Length: 429
Image (cartoon, rainbow, N blue to C red; front, side, top):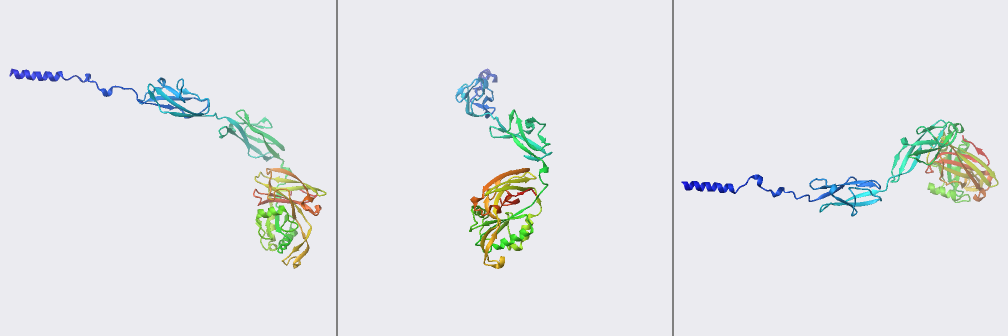
């Protein structure tokens, strides 16, 4: 029994001597080995030359190690963690910490955005006395962007600062306006101030018939007869004879034919927009009704004839500001006698009308036949012309006249017209 007790005591002693308290156990898994990677970030990826970018280095244990790291730009170490590019371009940045190297990041520097110009614009380039003009200013920058800077700009009329961006003139004439923003001035613009008493309150509407014809065309006398019926009833419809294939044909008529895509004769257009409905003598009202009422645009003409030299001025009046208006100016000749084929019952029904009188024959176009762009702001605008009629097959200069038309941008819609005989004047009406 004593031996048994001794054996039991021995076993217990061995067990306790082979174990140790938990505080004495070393766990290799918690032994810190240090960071294994780092990452580099920047507070901006794009900036202007002269601005500063700041870099930050973080290790994989989320510790900020920027101050202990080296930052390299395009392979060259910089001082600290900030960098200011002095030239435009893309820069490669990396960082090192102890033996660790970050991935690359890229920063792009652009040229500084600067103010390059200021543009002034206006609600109207022409106004009546007492009407208000509103200005606006737009800043244009070197990167192509624009910004409205009206509220931050100053506005000058004839170099005198005005209050705000609105102006009202009390006298007729032209004023010069400019805007100034951030010490930069816009280009000058001119505002026409118009005395309304120089213009009528409205202009009577005139109409134009362009008759594509020829002496060889047996059915063409039908339109000539219809035109004579119109001219018996009004002096506000002007007829142009555009000839083809005869002694009165010319390049101006050819150009008109091409623009109108004329395929058959006779063809007549009223106000350039509508064909005169067949049979024209039964539809005289179509031409008469085109010259009814009033419009906001009108024409006046002054002319003088010296030998074969025809000098004239065309005045264009506008009661409102318009855009895209064109001016057409023709020289026409009356009283040209030429035999005319005739398949109609008009003019006695003869197969040939001997010495038929052709009037309104197109001899010359002082503008493109479809019109030249013209100033169309409120007020009166004039254009001066001079032509040697002997260069354009005119037989009798004293039988010529000037037809002026204002048309839309396409040239195919008539706004208004005016006609005057050579050596005469025609005011606005």
